[in-house]
Length: 219
Image (cartoon, rainbow, N blue to C red):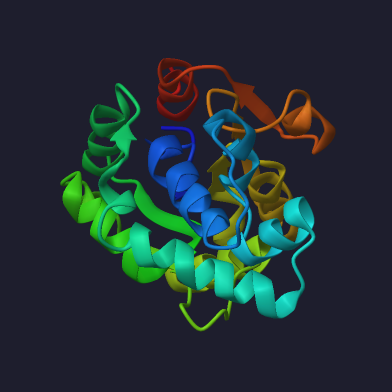
């Protein structure tokens, strides 16, 4: 096994959350009189903190963006959470890593309460020793903060960073890993923009879950 400590992003890395996230963004935008029928155009919302995305992509001010997040969660907490699916082969990979002695963590910008519900829904919660997300209050939404907290909980010695990898589909995951001195693997099957992982100088980039498995298990 190549690494002993593994930090996984959730959306676009372990699960494909497109339907749930984009329809909830659509729902939030509708409440502002903005109608976006094309869910593909809302894919950039997958990964980054929601509030920042509403401000960046729709020029919302702080108050509007916070209201949009609350509207988004109104639907996500009951419906959108489950409009989601595991990437094929991911369940097997996580169990192989766990059973092989690796210690796994989730490092997600999604609120921790939702992350835990999703892991339970897909019956993979037992694969992870540590689960770190953001807070519903808006605290700890930046990826480097999330990664730092996951590292704090997962590792017992600073030197263990040399045996730790951050795995994700967006530049935020790669840069968050770099900021902590971790190895990084970018997964191109997720929702990064073309060239995004390369521009972030991801140490390794894989195109499929099977390629990720080969890298992590040293096959």
